Length: 165
Image (cartoon, rainbow, N blue to C red):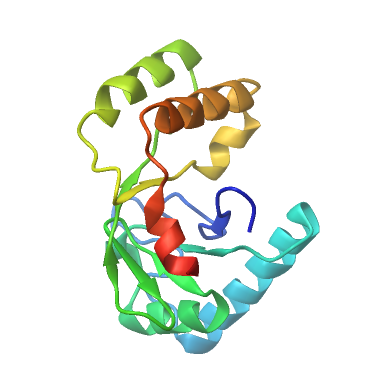
């Protein structure tokens, strides 16, 4: 783990069937979920040179309890939108905040985050960047400014610290 953990967020983020609201893990059994987790780990290792620190599960309506149990076989913790399930500790409340969800206007993303940050509890804040954002040429600029704002406010993203100590 570096300064901040890098988690895995699934192979497909968007609904596979928007009309029925079916996502990647909506109806998968344990074996199919294992295959997807193993593929994700392989990709993560290839890209980053190491496995993910944990799993950032897709929204809670898109996977089963069986899939969550399977995720915990592969990751030391799995986060849902507002709850973190560590493999060996009780669950924690932790707000997920995505400062970007498609970077179209970096200044607007940064300003919106600055305003929204006032409403988050520093003891439970988690920052989640979406995979599609890394394709933007402005991703690094936005990410650095987001972390500068967090650290300038004295937020330490302590939720993650609780997971690893």
